[in-house]
Image (cartoon, rainbow, N blue to C red; front, side):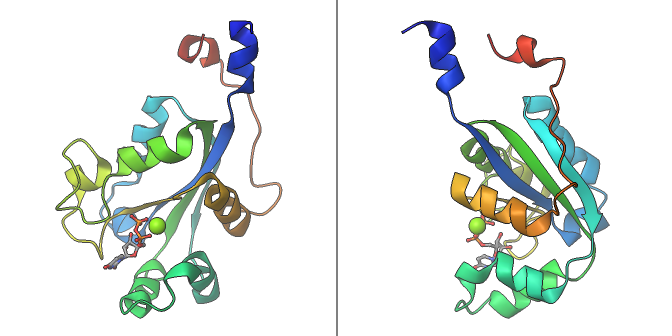
Length: 160
Ligand code: UDP
Ligand code: MG
């Protein structure tokens, strides 16, 4: 096994990251994008978008039975969101770490929610919880032609 062959076998994953309406209203869009950008992941999709109710319900369909579901949907459609697709080896789990715990009071300092939010119902950002959901959510929120495949020039400075 040659090292460069092992590296090329590493799975490149995709995750769907979304600045929720409170993040947009509070002027945190640039701050949130920059955390993923500075980490070194690759941005492949980005748009400001007013989410319709049916899309919000489809996105959160696994939570449909929960008592907070109606308020969650109202929250997500209450104003524009910023939709993002990010790509990289290990990006799904790493993005969840950068985001922090669902309850911002339990999220570690240094994480987005730990630094920028105080309440679960206003926790400023979404991140997919598995590579499968990353793919599902990107397909849900982006149309074909809205995603860009490109090679960042910094790639060799991030990965050997
Ligand atoms: N949520 C809520 N109350 C709860 C649990 C969740 O309002 O008791 C909202 C919150 O905005 C959260 C979203 O529902 O981010 C999705 O919940 P999930 O458990 O998937 O948390 P996440 O994956 O966003 O950390
Ligand atoms: Mg979730």
